[in-house]
Length: 171
Image (cartoon, rainbow, N blue to C red; front, side):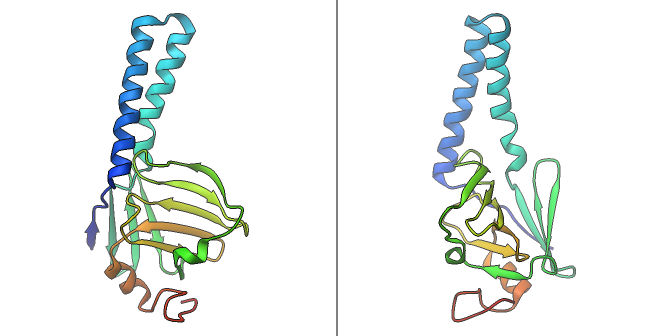
Protein backbone atom coordinates (compact mmCIF):
# COMPACT_ATOMS: atom_id res chain seq x y z
CA UNK A 1 0.00 0.00 0.00
CA UNK A 2 1.47 3.38 -1.03
CA UNK A 3 0.96 6.34 1.28
CA UNK A 4 0.88 10.01 0.35
CA UNK A 5 0.78 12.96 2.75
CA UNK A 6 -0.80 15.91 0.93
CA UNK A 7 0.77 19.28 1.63
CA UNK A 8 -1.12 22.53 2.10
CA UNK A 9 -0.26 25.54 -0.02
CA UNK A 10 0.93 28.84 1.47
CA UNK A 11 -2.49 30.51 1.16
CA UNK A 12 -4.23 27.73 3.11
CA UNK A 13 -1.52 27.84 5.78
CA UNK A 14 -1.82 31.64 6.12
CA UNK A 15 -5.64 31.58 6.25
CA UNK A 16 -5.56 28.78 8.83
CA UNK A 17 -3.11 30.67 11.06
CA UNK A 18 -5.08 33.93 10.79
CA UNK A 19 -8.41 32.26 11.59
CA UNK A 20 -6.94 30.30 14.50
CA UNK A 21 -5.42 33.49 15.91
CA UNK A 22 -8.77 35.25 15.48
CA UNK A 23 -10.51 32.37 17.29
CA UNK A 24 -7.98 32.56 20.13
CA UNK A 25 -8.56 36.33 20.37
CA UNK A 26 -12.35 35.85 20.39
CA UNK A 27 -12.04 33.28 23.17
CA UNK A 28 -9.78 35.62 25.17
CA UNK A 29 -12.18 38.54 24.67
CA UNK A 30 -15.10 36.35 25.66
CA UNK A 31 -13.42 35.28 28.86
CA UNK A 32 -11.95 38.68 29.75
CA UNK A 33 -14.59 41.21 28.75
CA UNK A 34 -17.96 39.61 28.08
CA UNK A 35 -20.47 38.18 30.47
CA UNK A 36 -23.55 36.01 30.54
CA UNK A 37 -24.89 34.28 27.45
CA UNK A 38 -22.93 36.52 25.03
CA UNK A 39 -19.68 35.29 26.55
CA UNK A 40 -20.52 31.63 25.92
CA UNK A 41 -21.88 32.27 22.43
CA UNK A 42 -18.64 34.00 21.39
CA UNK A 43 -16.49 31.30 22.99
CA UNK A 44 -18.62 28.53 21.44
CA UNK A 45 -18.44 29.98 17.92
CA UNK A 46 -14.68 30.48 18.19
CA UNK A 47 -14.14 26.98 19.58
CA UNK A 48 -16.27 25.32 16.89
CA UNK A 49 -14.50 27.31 14.15
CA UNK A 50 -11.14 26.08 15.45
CA UNK A 51 -12.12 22.48 16.26
CA UNK A 52 -14.41 21.28 13.43
CA UNK A 53 -12.32 21.97 10.25
CA UNK A 54 -9.45 19.56 11.05
CA UNK A 55 -11.98 16.69 10.85
CA UNK A 56 -12.45 17.49 7.13
CA UNK A 57 -8.76 17.82 6.25
CA UNK A 58 -7.26 14.79 4.45
CA UNK A 59 -4.09 14.13 6.46
CA UNK A 60 -2.96 11.24 4.28
CA UNK A 61 -4.06 9.11 1.38
CA UNK A 62 -3.18 5.53 0.67
CA UNK A 63 -3.63 3.39 -2.40
CA UNK A 64 -3.98 -0.39 -2.15
CA UNK A 65 -2.84 -2.08 -5.39
CA UNK A 66 -4.67 -5.33 -4.63
CA UNK A 67 -8.11 -3.87 -3.92
CA UNK A 68 -7.64 -0.87 -6.26
CA UNK A 69 -8.94 1.49 -3.57
CA UNK A 70 -7.85 4.90 -2.41
CA UNK A 71 -8.33 5.56 1.27
CA UNK A 72 -8.48 9.16 2.42
CA UNK A 73 -7.57 9.35 6.09
CA UNK A 74 -9.13 12.15 8.13
CA UNK A 75 -8.91 12.87 11.82
CA UNK A 76 -10.81 9.94 13.34
CA UNK A 77 -12.22 8.28 10.19
CA UNK A 78 -11.38 7.08 6.67
CA UNK A 79 -13.19 7.50 3.34
CA UNK A 80 -12.67 4.70 0.78
CA UNK A 81 -12.92 5.31 -2.96
CA UNK A 82 -13.03 2.31 -5.28
CA UNK A 83 -12.34 2.30 -9.00
CA UNK A 84 -15.41 0.10 -9.40
CA UNK A 85 -17.62 2.76 -7.79
CA UNK A 86 -15.93 5.73 -9.50
CA UNK A 87 -15.03 4.47 -12.98
CA UNK A 88 -14.93 7.87 -14.75
CA UNK A 89 -11.90 10.15 -14.54
CA UNK A 90 -12.56 13.80 -15.40
CA UNK A 91 -10.36 16.82 -15.90
CA UNK A 92 -10.92 20.21 -14.31
CA UNK A 93 -12.16 21.47 -17.69
CA UNK A 94 -14.99 18.93 -17.58
CA UNK A 95 -16.29 20.54 -14.39
CA UNK A 96 -16.57 24.15 -15.55
CA UNK A 97 -20.31 24.73 -15.38
CA UNK A 98 -22.24 27.97 -15.11
CA UNK A 99 -24.35 28.12 -11.99
CA UNK A 100 -22.32 25.87 -9.69
CA UNK A 101 -23.38 26.35 -6.06
CA UNK A 102 -21.06 26.17 -3.08
CA UNK A 103 -23.14 24.34 -0.47
CA UNK A 104 -20.53 24.05 2.27
CA UNK A 105 -16.84 24.59 1.68
CA UNK A 106 -13.62 26.01 3.00
CA UNK A 107 -11.71 28.62 1.06
CA UNK A 108 -8.39 27.87 2.70
CA UNK A 109 -9.06 26.95 6.34
CA UNK A 110 -7.26 23.59 6.62
CA UNK A 111 -7.35 23.19 2.81
CA UNK A 112 -10.13 23.51 0.21
CA UNK A 113 -12.56 20.76 1.21
CA UNK A 114 -16.25 21.16 0.56
CA UNK A 115 -19.58 20.15 -0.93
CA UNK A 116 -20.75 21.62 -4.23
CA UNK A 117 -23.65 21.26 -6.67
CA UNK A 118 -22.73 21.81 -10.30
CA UNK A 119 -24.92 23.62 -12.80
CA UNK A 120 -25.96 20.32 -14.39
CA UNK A 121 -27.14 18.87 -11.05
CA UNK A 122 -24.15 16.69 -10.16
CA UNK A 123 -22.92 16.58 -6.57
CA UNK A 124 -19.26 17.40 -6.05
CA UNK A 125 -17.04 16.72 -3.01
CA UNK A 126 -13.55 18.15 -2.82
CA UNK A 127 -10.72 16.97 -0.60
CA UNK A 128 -8.12 19.40 -1.91
CA UNK A 129 -5.20 20.58 0.20
CA UNK A 130 -3.04 22.30 -2.43
CA UNK A 131 -4.40 24.22 -5.41
CA UNK A 132 -1.28 23.77 -7.56
CA UNK A 133 -0.59 20.08 -6.98
CA UNK A 134 -2.21 17.38 -9.09
CA UNK A 135 -5.98 17.35 -8.61
CA UNK A 136 -7.93 14.36 -9.92
CA UNK A 137 -11.69 14.18 -10.34
CA UNK A 138 -13.30 10.75 -9.98
CA UNK A 139 -16.97 10.27 -10.86
CA UNK A 140 -19.70 7.66 -10.71
CA UNK A 141 -21.69 9.69 -13.26
CA UNK A 142 -23.62 11.65 -10.63
CA UNK A 143 -21.21 12.26 -7.76
CA UNK A 144 -17.72 13.68 -8.25
CA UNK A 145 -14.81 13.48 -5.80
CA UNK A 146 -11.75 15.69 -6.22
CA UNK A 147 -8.51 14.69 -4.50
CA UNK A 148 -4.86 15.67 -4.51
CA UNK A 149 -3.01 12.51 -5.48
CA UNK A 150 0.23 11.45 -7.13
CA UNK A 151 -0.09 10.80 -10.87
CA UNK A 152 1.16 7.21 -10.54
CA UNK A 153 -1.75 6.25 -8.25
CA UNK A 154 -4.29 7.50 -10.72
CA UNK A 155 -2.42 5.94 -13.66
CA UNK A 156 -2.40 2.56 -11.90
CA UNK A 157 -6.10 2.81 -11.12
CA UNK A 158 -7.23 3.85 -14.57
CA UNK A 159 -4.48 2.71 -16.97
CA UNK A 160 -5.74 5.16 -19.61
CA UNK A 161 -5.48 8.81 -20.40
CA UNK A 162 -7.61 11.30 -18.53
CA UNK A 163 -10.95 12.08 -20.21
CA UNK A 164 -10.63 15.22 -22.28
CA UNK A 165 -6.87 14.89 -22.75
CA UNK A 166 -5.51 13.30 -25.91
CA UNK A 167 -9.06 12.45 -27.02
CA UNK A 168 -9.73 9.96 -24.20
CA UNK A 169 -13.28 9.02 -23.24
CA UNK A 170 -14.99 7.47 -20.26
CA UNK A 171 -12.94 4.66 -18.74
